[in-house]
Image (cartoon, rainbow, N blue to C red):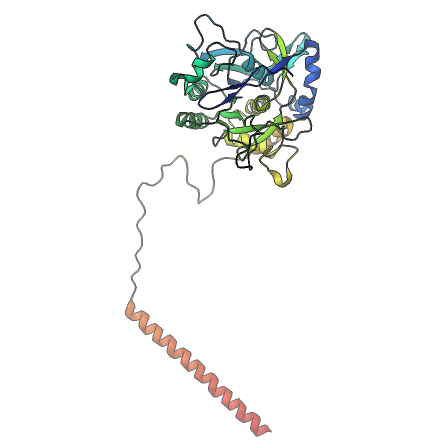
Amino acid sequence: MLRRGAAVALAGTLLLLGVAPAWADDVRGGQRPVIRTLALTQAWRVSQGAGVTVAVLDSGVDPRHRDLAGSVRVGKDFTDGANPPGVAPRRLHGTYMASLIAGHGHGREGRLGIIGVAPEADVLSVRVILEDEEPGFREFNSAERFENVVARGIRYAVDEGADVINMSISKELATREERAAIRYAISKGVVLVAAAGNDGDRKIDGDFAPYSYPAAFPGVVSVGATDRRLRRATFSNWNSSVTVAAPGVDIMGAGPGDEYWVGRGTSQATALVSGVAALIKAKYPRMSPPVVAQALTASATDRPPGGYDTATGFGVVNAAKALTEAGRLATHTETAAGAQAQDPARAVRAEPAPIKIIRRDEERVTVYAAIAAAAAVGALASLAVIFVLVRRVRRAHS
């Protein structure tokens, strides 16, 4: 594999993984392991992502790639001004991720090229990072005005109608603005999926790999990567933020200019999970983010001993089983019912109800206590008399 990327600083470290070119006629065959692992053939009988918009917060998506043509809407570029005037974005990483989510192939019946997890979904391209080959890379990573581009990108994607937000990005430091943006997205019913990070070989106190943001924020589905044996890939971060895992080694994807690439990373695994989330949202559009996450985790395969570990979370995502679990969860309500439940349509009582005061009558308590004590003494005396009488009767018998 040719490495074409390095760590990119963005209020910490943002990782872009390198990829290598592939021949077009090898593409669909190269995708077979992923299609089989995620059970996509079975899942597509239920949902293919129609009507869902997945925002790809990344380096930009090439809308003219033959496997994405007609499915991409180019949104705002939050890196504007970092590159010198007239320099076009390369859009390598973003195109790659978008193809894994919503690639529809090309040729007769779309049988050639990349087929994404949700081939009928739409993509909203939101540019929030630069790749290290771009001339504005240093300016982007050092200028204060670009510090909160991820937070701004999340809010923009939500306001533009995204149902799922894919963030195949990873950085070590979190900001208050990002936390608030994630809370805003979840409140609007948007599912957030992010990469757990690629520092799996760097341990903290020997116990776990570093935490990565935005994946480590509560409410975000944090995705780790597995190898061909569906075990944690050596580069994949392992810590308690990891929710689920997906294949992340030797993954086929599209690149700008109708190219194809093979790469590895939690970025690719994240894109695959975002695609599964899109399948669920297409079938159950009103399903809330926590319930979508529950469908992903409860249906995962290759579950670790005990049901969870920090390497692969609750296991490897399975699209067909996730849709089945989502169907089961869709029959339940998220609102408590019954006589004891608070009606959400009614305001909570502003003032407390009157409290009944019980007066303690010390005099009566004393009298009753004395009576009880006397009764107890009488009972003991009676037992003693009975005991003496019994002994006398036995002696007389003798």
